[in-house]
Image (cartoon, rainbow, N blue to C red; front, side):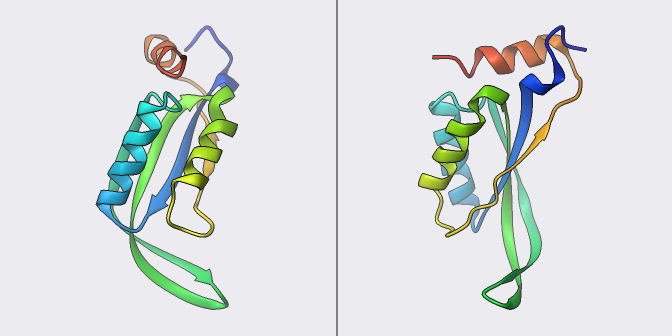
Length: 111
């Protein structure tokens, strides 16, 4: 367990409509130091309601490990660099893990 509080680290999930878009989004986030690591999972099948209709689409999920104090800037970055009108941006607190890894996450999100 990290010596820092659990609320200091989050995983942020978003989805894109292609692997290339997911790679671009992930690379931009890591390059901007808004996330220490971004993993791409996919393809996945997403079922959702959009414009009053149930949609089924193939998507790629991007999971970003970051320091919680980067969440606002990361949200702005995703919104500005995403092709969706309303991109998924969901943050989940990290409640434990390797203190070395979690320290690295914070270090990698600093200027």
